[in-house]
Image (cartoon, rainbow, N blue to C red; front, top):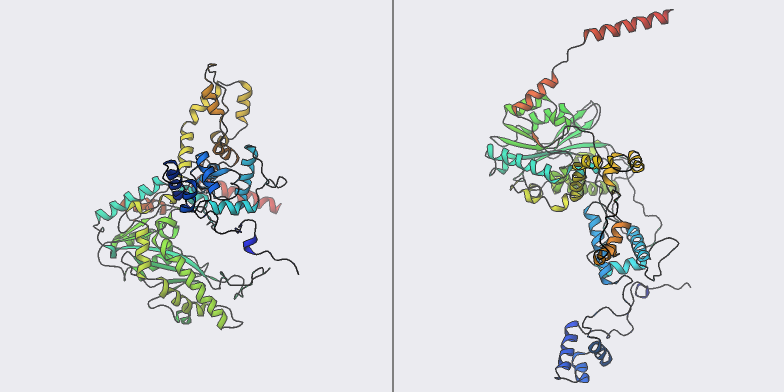
Length: 544
């Protein structure tokens, strides 16, 4: 039979042969050394009183070593260098480039090579061992293995402190002018999310070492149905509304729906458009909203912002439409923060149970109402809605509710902007450089010249400044990590366009702007005559 190695016998987790060794603490060691030096105890008495072996105690006294470290050989890099690796990993995470296990192993190998440390890492693969990584994580419990969430570069750039600060200033202005600071029932958030008529497999319990673990699904990819959700800061949810793709409405679609739910049909797709949003605002939101002026917060989707009739209806009925800044809804929208994740999770659980109880049947539109009713009852709760408005700083009004880690790469962007401001000065300095260096700079793009370090000429120093030179030339683990695993530059120069920020859509200025955009443009008579002549000539050529 093959020999099976137990977990305790693995090289990354050594089990002591004598468990009683090293049970004394650093405090006991200091007390024992102090009593021996003060002649209060002999070496043997202190050894027996504090449970420290006499040879260990004598060696500690002779070497004046009062720090208790782990038994056995120390780590390859030492405690100080390992802490620099930890800080560099945290730095990469803060800039949105969390390293993988492979990245950390490669980083450790390069650091050992640059420091010329005698190691046993794999030189062919240029990687540190997996055992070293496991021990490294055990010695530094502040680092753990987590599953990263994808963050688009647009959200990375869009979620910045300047944009968020402008949004909260505008929100405070709206709440103050309309006396809504103490009226949570008049502050609403609206958003849409897509639900698929399919059960998504999640985490399951299976045999360890299985090559394939599968879960039966109703189909490859189910039909997408849009769910329109809206709630206020008091925790009151409006009944949901759904968008089905198609023209023909059937009464069966309403079976087992949550009370007050509404179904809209869209011929082209199941996504929301301007007509459906206006219909929802008139027939669904307005009859149920609280009396008085009402603030409705949503994202900047075109269906919400571009219809002039929608803006006029909102202005005539005391509905203030506030559009969130682009690419910031994952932190500034209450429904995204506390409702949709729970709604989709409970819907998937209900769909999974439906598939188990209905053999050889797909999840159809007729079953959608029953499944969503189960998920809606568990997710559309007062606690979830109130938590969402509190986490986004809308009610109670708190701009500091947005955590610092939401602004990923903020320091990097500020550095990039500083480089951009100094770009013209650098261009003037480049003109004074030698011809060969100017030719090299012309071959680079503007982005490369902004992000890459500029070659500098050595500054002449007096021969007596040896201490400054030695300090600058000193190779440290921190400098090596910054060279071998630098924080990548993700920002590029974007063509100048109108910067979109949070805005109130029902202001007179915005309404007049929309009216101008909706006005028909005057046709160019000269241009149309040229087109007609061109078509006639082409027709004559075909006849000939």
